[in-house]
Length: 310
Image 1 (cartoon, helix red, strand yellow):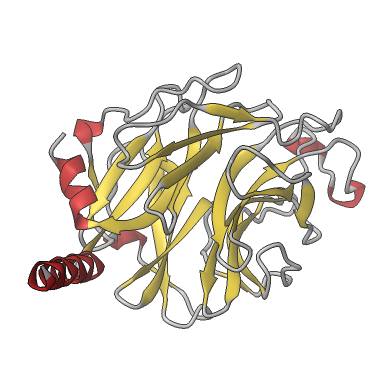
Image 2 (cartoon, rainbow, N blue to C red):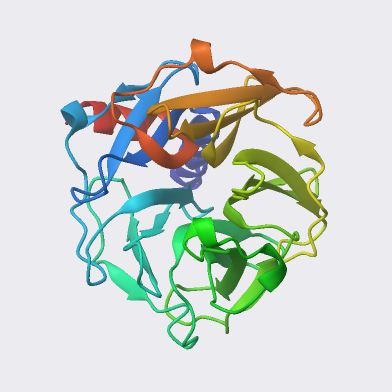
C-alpha cells in the first residue's frame, strides 16, 4: 500500500512539474470592422508573425448591451487557469461586456456591467481592460469615459466634446463590484490604458488622445499600487503617427508593445529592454488583415494546440 501511495505522489509531482515546464505560446485577441461579429484570436510562436485562428472566424458572437458590439476585447488568464474577458459593447452605452472561459472555445453567458450608469452625464465606456492584483486578490477593471462638464481646461470642440479620463472598479468574483473611482487624470484627454505588473510596480501604457495640438501617441506611466496614484507620463514610446490600443507583452526578455495604427489600417509595435529607450519594429510584425485593437497574452502550448485544431 505504501508503494502505491508513493507511486501516486510521485506521479502527481511529475505531472505538476510537466505542467510548470510546459512551453508557452502567444495569443492576440482582437476585433474586425466595428466589432459586430465578436471575438477573433491570432496565434504566434515568436511574437512577430501572427496567424488568424479558426480561419479568421469569430469565437464568440456579442450579445451584451443594446448595440451588441465586441470591440477592444481584453483577455487575461488568472492563477486558477480561467480566462476573463471584458470589451466595449457600444460607442455610447454606459457599461461594458464580460464573459469567462476555461479554454477560449466555450464561453460563459455574457454579462453587461453598468459601471457608469450611475453618472447622468457620462457619454461612453471605451476600451475596458482587466488586470489581476495578487496582493489584494482581486481584479481591477478600468476604461475611458467622458463625463460632460468635467475637466473643461482640456475640452476641445473638434473632438465632438469627448474629453476622457480613466476610471475603475474592483471585484473578486465578477459578481460584486466596488463603486466607480477615477483612476488617472494626467491633465489631458486620455484613453486606452493597459496595465501590467512588473518587478513590484505597475506599468500603465496609455494613449494621449489630444487633438489640438495633435498628439495621438502612446506613453508610459508607473505606480507602486494598481489603483495609483500613477506618475505623469514618463516617455513617449511611439513615433510620428497616430496610434492607439497599446498591449504590452514580454517577448524573449524584451518589452513588446503592440498597437493599432488606426489611420493606416494596420498594426504596429515597439520594443524596449529598459522601458526607456524604444525601437519601432512595426515593419517586422505581421497580423491578420483587418486586425483592430486587442490584447496580447501568453498561454500554455496545450491551449494553443486545441485552438489550432479547430
